[in-house]
Amino acid sequence: MGSDNGLRSLGDYARRSVNLFTICRCGHSAVLDSAKLNRWYLFHCWNTDMETIGAHLRCSRCDGHPDRFAPTPRQPNNPHWMSDEHQWERLAKRLADRDVTKPMS
Ligand SMILES: [Zn+2]
Image (cartoon, rainbow, N blue to C red; front, side, top):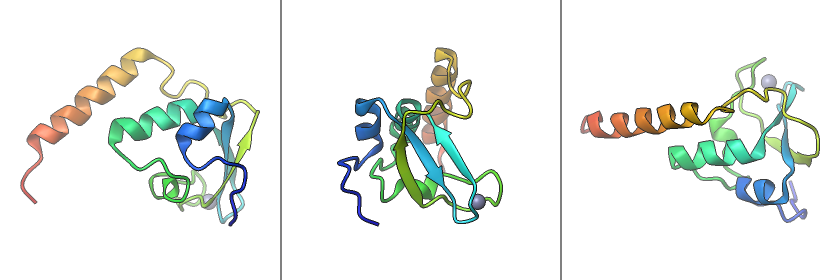
């Protein structure tokens, strides 16, 4: 699993303006918008290192976690995902509310 392309985090993908090609063990693949995905992870305070991002991704076919990633110039499969700034505002509010009401566990 060598990654000698210098892309070690979602932020690296976003800065290079390349999207994320994900490949699941079941063979299903998808192209994700790296800039939006990076922002999504930062909103959730998730680690954006390529070695750990699979934990928060789900394959739409087998529900598994994709574990292979590569840069691609192709357009994302779902360009409408989080394409509206209001969606980001709602996400921020939802996350903030969740933090406030989080029980001691
Ligand atoms: Zn799969």
